[in-house]
Image (tube, rainbow, N blue to C red):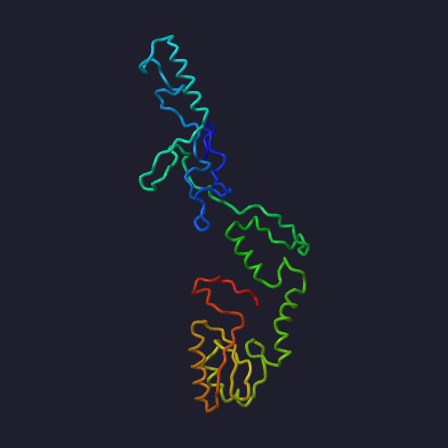
Length: 271
């Protein structure tokens, strides 16, 4: 925190091209003389005008000597130059200022900056979220959830439906549903035959369709790290039911991670 009793360097020295001396595009500023450098450092308490006691200071000249006035003018002129007093740092091998304001770090940010929450035209006053009552941590979590959602108070009505229509249009145009969680056709006779396998798999999977009577599509609800192993095991269970199986596909939609286990966000969203 700057002391108002002292004067500080107002501008950091620059080179002939106007670039701050010591600036590096990777590491940033590095010049030791910055806005914390003091231009008029205090004198020793023995000779400082506010703390000196003439009875304790030995007099170099007798009272009334003109040399005293001349020395005072020289001292005043020297201080008026406001030169930065430096010394050579033995480790940095460069000139560093001797007097600087003590650095206490940046002030702690206790809350997020105030924002205008009335800058959207879609939310009614009675429906808007009051972030001021949530606190910084909870407000950030809610803001992330709302930003990731496809239909929230920041978007006009119908945005979510239009988003999903665009996402699923390709499947209807090409007639292929692989890669989505859309349900297709499944032969009831084959479904009845593989029922023992479905009972073992339980709620971990949900049968979506059976393609060409040998490829089985499931919606997978388990952990992503077990997906490949579960696919192979499901194929073994289906073949044990005396059903021809050339492939098992576990569909997971847009889910790519296990946030509860790998440090990701714990909020998936309804889509």
